[in-house]
Length: 446
Ligand SMILES: Nc1nc2c(ncn2[C@@H]2O[C@H](COP(=O)(O)OP(=O)(O)OP(=O)(O)O)[C@@H](O)[C@H]2O)c(=O)[nH]1
Ligand SMILES: [Mg+2]
Image (cartoon, rainbow, N blue to C red):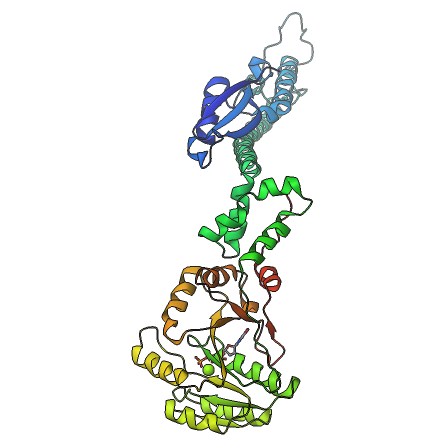
């Protein structure tokens, strides 16, 4: 079959050109999107439809689409049979009259039946010479003819509905072909960027991660996923915070409301005191949140470590005099614009005597977007965070934003928090773990 090519700005336009040329029963062989092949060239794309006229006999072409053709043929055959049957309709003659003497005249019912055309008329055979009986039979025939017409009208409606459904179906099929083709035509670069965006990695980092991946794939047997993970690993900075015997270490946890500061501190305290068996103490600077002191006090007594409350730098210095080697300091959250609270926190943390190795851990909820993470790091700049803990990794499928933000702000990641359980839901961060936590599972496209 010879197909002609029709082009439109979209499927609708292309199909309407096809319809104008070949009618609604045109045969469509393919529908595809053609781009000019340039990056971002979808704006210059058009839809191309290959179509041919239906090969149905002209008298059968109508509203039905190509798929309705057998139906149309059946209807034509039925019409032919109806005409033949109508021709055979005769009216019975009274006994004694000869067919030759009285030519057969079609009854009004037979005429009606012939007019209805599409349905085979019932054969009429009136045998009675009684006028009453003949009238009765005639009435019955009229009723039957009405029924035949009603059925014929119903059949016509059904055919129209079927034609509409067929037209819709072919339009949906064309659209589906189009979507499938658009997906398969998307460049590997676009696919990778879209997958990275799905896990929260966007902008500069996404561009850097995907650059040259297609070329690298040709030179190695690694999958896209493995290549991207390796690239992310190289960009993630991690800091190892360890607890060693005889080492004086102070860790303060800062961050926004509900980020997981207290929980992280509790996990670190349990690790140091219970798992490492190191002399450990907890100090809280959170005298603001209702119940914060009671909560930490109870936890400290649970793991059997000393507990102190400090209101300012003087009371913190006091408390530190009574503390063992490992000290974990919980802090209050503050509103982003609460300068006074930030100043108090700053003074306290700066007052920590020099003989402690001091770390300020910024708690960053893993669901944060990259730009918000950068803002957060900036807003805690005054307390000079040395590293961060990514919290609530178990609650998001898009931890790439927080990781991107930390990379952009050049803040190392020290811990990953995967749940609220103390102490098991905390792990030391390595670049490989971070990449594994973030990277999408991209199927290799070769
Ligand atoms: N799912 C999940 N929940 C966590 C995680 N870390 C902390 N939480 C929960 O988050 C809630 C807040 O945690 P906190 O440790 O109280 O947070 P905070 O930063 O100290 O909160 P404020 O002191 O009120 O600012 C609690 O219900 C914790 O159990 C985590 O990694 N995953
Ligand atoms: Mg807290």
